[in-house]
Image (cartoon, rainbow, N blue to C red; front, side, top):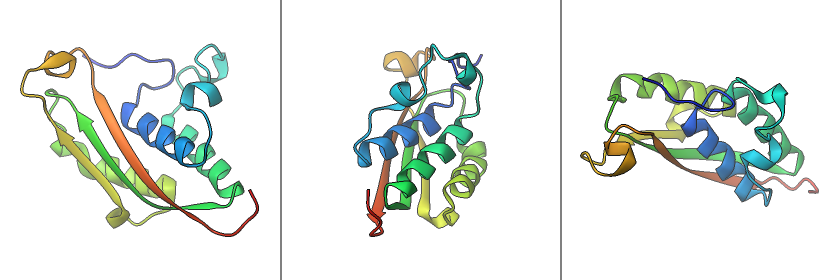
Length: 133
């Protein structure tokens, strides 16, 4: 069992990317990294996040924190939360205390409960650092 996607199907990092893009007034991950562009086939979402954070920084924003939620019944994600948090904090240049990674289930309800997919939500806090945008 696994996820299928054009890049690496990392739904959590994709949600973080979209949260950053939304906060800086850009489109979404599909606009910036279209799935019909072969150069993004199988690419690591962490690399895409680093690129988006570079864009954000060039626009005059610094990331303050990230908060995320993964929604699925299986697999149980608690054994992986620390590694996910570490990867996100390292990529964003944040201490792990500034990155929230939580998991929840839908107790068998909906597509996530049936094991047909995983949902992810992310919120980021950015601070304008005074550079012209």
